[in-house]
Amino acid sequence: MEPACRKEKPKLNSTPTRGDRARQKSAQQELKQRQRAEIYALNKVMTELEQQQFEAFCKQMQSQAE
Image (cartoon, rainbow, N blue to C red; front, side):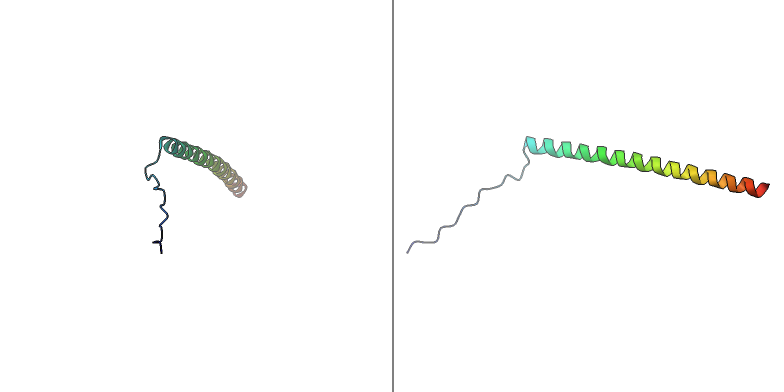
């Protein structure tokens, strides 16, 4: 009888390679750019909403004054 042979697993490199780091950095930059664009879009929408509400308030105050 032969002893059971163990399959040797190739050791994975735990340290990222240059290419991995570059891809990770690139992905991080893309994420930041997308988040920034989303923040600017949300800010624009909120500013427009605030302006509409202010104009409605002014009209209401004008009609009450008359």
